[in-house]
Image (cartoon, rainbow, N blue to C red):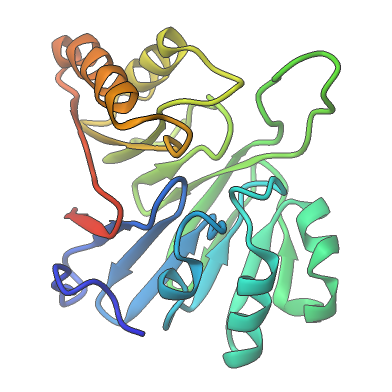
Length: 226
């Protein structure tokens, strides 16, 4: 199964960033491709088609479809996966093809330069256990997973978690302003109605515009170039 027809893959000079529903993002650059957080709400089989590497931020089911990842790994024996240690333990049958990641590390994945940040999921409630969460900076594109960790590297494109049980719209706005990427789009909005999503997006867009941040909507299976 191929990529959406609207995507024109670049020649290595242009990165194509595709949103595959909820929190899943795929980055293509010529013959290189990497996917972050292929969860079950994100058409993971389609997102994972032909990728060289997978990055997983944390263990929650909306960010990780274990069966889809294992199927992709069995189909391609050269596919490698990076994830926090609890996720690596879930995928331990893959042996050294699953790499535990610690915050503060840098590595190459699928031909992309990656830096790992954070380490902890945002708090939902004191009664709910906090899990590990790794945010990934990939060649200037930043995916925070379920966190508001701000990267120290200059960021060209930010994936903004629009709505979650661990956040408020004010926190979302503050996060986008703190990262200060010139362009940003929404992820993590699956639980919103269309009206609720549009309302939140308008609020965020208006609040970050004075900071020269272009916050835009990206439909599932659509893409933007970088």
